[in-house]
Image (cartoon, rainbow, N blue to C red; front, side):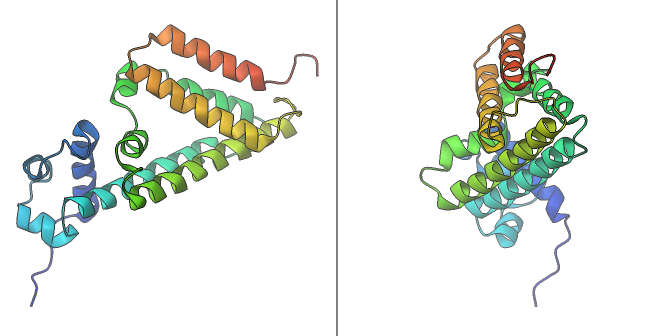
Length: 197
């Protein structure tokens, strides 16, 4: 009879994903995973199958948690919707060190999605949730009269996602914070309702 697991599986996934986040999938060794989680190779493989299985579980957990936080951050009444979009965007340029580390979703998609259908599916589903939250928030801002009403909210949501991912990519490349802030300002200005409307 199999012995019961004596570790906190969600916590192990969080610890493993930190290693994957820091080193990438290919660059993360089993030794780094055992050091990060405190588990032996046999325990990791017994619970998750192999390195790929552990990565998929860690990646899915990360995406579920991150998208949940984004949905929560952008949800709310129509009044204040544009301010929520602005706050979300500015939070992405507030910490240059975080920008340089990058988002695990973006990093994993860039490294693996072309060759790994499961990673591609998780990434696509996550970006759909992200775009949906941005679209709904922009629609609310339009209803409140704070965002231009001549832009399809889905197109605006896609634009916001592209700008946010671009800001992260440029931040990782070492763009100065004032330049990233200027990009955010330009995107917000392009969506804001003209003054006096």
